[in-house]
Amino acid sequence: MKSEMSGAKIVVLSGSGISAESGLPTFRDANGLWRNYRWEEVASPEGWKKNPGLVLEFYNERREKAWNATPNAAHIAIGKLEKYYDVVVITQNVDELHERGGSTNVIHVHGNLAFARSTINPSLRYRIEGNPIILGQTGEDGSQLRPDVVWFGEEVMDLEECRFHVAGANKVLVVGTSLAVYPVASLVHFANPEAEKVLVALQMDTIPFGFTFFQGPASVIVPTLVERWIK
Ligand code: BV8
Image (cartoon, rainbow, N blue to C red; front, top):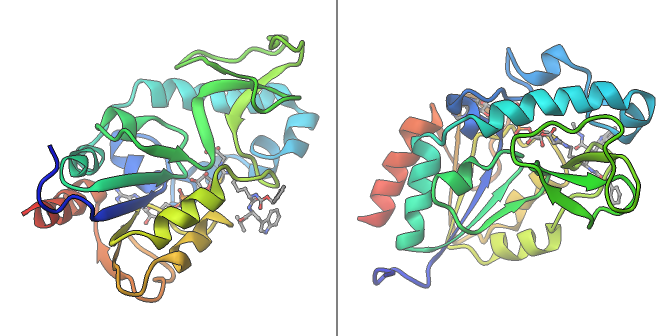
């Protein structure tokens, strides 16, 4: 049952930082993934062509870890918001921790590890949960299965829809993202000047105009923000 605040809309834009306290690595932090792998080799069509086995291995490891991870207090607090607001979660993350934390309206703009897809036809997807994709495993169309994620140089999912949601939000919560990757990072510029705009991260190189920066761990800051919003 929505409270008297229903009708007000909150859009969350999240990145790997929100899942860091669930044990999943970020990309650009000190011990981030791009410290141990070159994105060109494991997260690009060129890398896939050159060495699909390495790419499958990179994602199989991450998929198993993500599948066995549990949502933290930040995911759960965002899930709770749905009782009081219309909530849309736009995530760059390929884990399903928002869904496990109770969010039911999640847009995975960079794809989802729990799915494999045909290398020919992106709409031919198979839910594989935490299971690996093996070289030689093919879809119904006979093509090698690949992770259902958006690599560098590939088109991002549902961007128009996301711009619409951000533009119509009364509150925009950006959490756990360096806003280094485009075009998703540009979503913050679609926020209404009148909207309440907050950014939660451990550290940020630049704070988007109009956003209030709350520095600290998502599992501590996000629940306090949510408590304030549902009072
Ligand atoms: C596109 C795949 C065109 C899934 C990812 C030069 C060469 C090639 C490309 C480009 C180029 N210049 C620009 C581009 C475009 C490129 C881009 O933006 N590159 C950047 C790096 C310069 N973008 C693209 O290629 C995109 N596609 O443009 O296609 C096109 C158009 C039409 C038709 C055809 C083609 C595609 C981008 C998607 C790439 N895929 N991942 C996966 O493997 O996961 S990107 C990767 O980065 C993830 O998706 C991730 O989500 C995303 C963003 O990273 P963050 O999540 O922000 O993580 P990061 O480590 O950076 O930051 C962590 C943050 O959390 C920090 O702020 C930290 O303080 C905070 N934090 C940490 N711990 C905590 C915390 N906060 C709170 N609490 C904590 N405990």
